[in-house]
Image 1 (cartoon, rainbow, N blue to C red):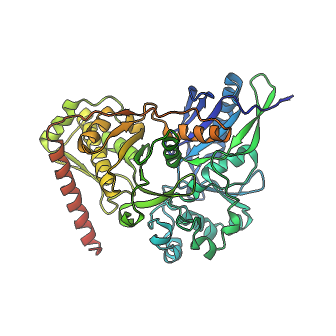
Image 2: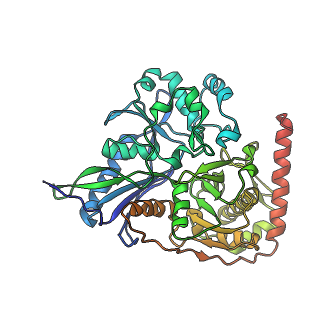
Image 3: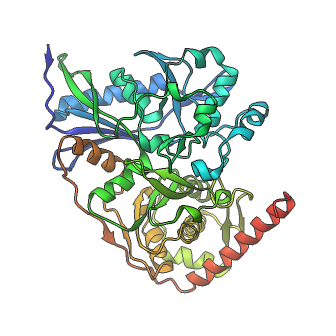
Length: 471
């Protein structure tokens, strides 16, 4: 027997990151009732790196069954990382496994699409490597899997793919279509010229606002009975975090959303200030507005530089590596403001906590520079995993004395933003501003270290650009 759905119970939010994925259960008053975690598994298909989608969906269904049984969950929402899509047909056919965006397309395919990518002035998206622009990966499948592409009824963005898995509905959504995909023209609030040039417009379903109820899913409970829950349209994760802070009443702020990526969005930055060569671009808000952004893979880089350090970092370790003149220079992952150079540590060998201190200094230096590039003079809101590293936020506050720096006390802005959007569709607004001010660290010599780091990084970039004939 299937029990009727109620719109007033707890909400399950899948927050799907590239490295870590989570399930949160939010009570109607916004409190977190439960949390589950998993890591996506990536495999291979015809030589392409792809998601083990069945394994992942099994985890999602199992955990959803459990939280619906235990907490009486009545709604489902999805927030997900960018750069990912699926080709689907009908209610149950995935026509090609979901591609891992951290792989380059073949040279022959790249040579075909590169000349027809729109100008930066249209999409405000640089010509990005790997699958950071999903138009390149879509084109890759069109060229090498023409039958699958032809049979595809819809190209679904990643959050909407999971909505389809639970409901069979085909929908699109503003914030993901506009997330550096070369698919969207922010100023026109419409698909880009590339979409029409390649005849793809009909393959994108109707746009539905993030958070809107788009269908129902049947969940079999632990006792063997069934119930139905509402399914809300999903959202791009960083834009979800931005929406959350705006919905709590904050205005004129720069969000530093941290996870695998550090995504910095400043709605007060003029679009003309965006530099395509420094991974600056315009995302799109959940309302379809241009969202000037800059990004680098800061969480990934911190892990690579620190050797996966997960313990606290003391100020003494930071001061020790600063005194020795040890610097981590960009870049340790693809993308970011220094795409021309490969990361290295200069000034001496470091291990253990001192290496982690160098990693922490690196992400602070990168964030500080990025805030300057994106013209940030307003309040800075730090959200996500790096916000939990006290020295990261306090050193950033020391380097930005003219700005107020605050951090989220729950550090899960993308999931909470997704919940807020779903609750809004129910007519409920449970979340309030929970950010707290960050005190400056007061580390002697940090500003001098910052200036030296910038000089070294800029010189390395200039050398690389001259060598490549770019200057």
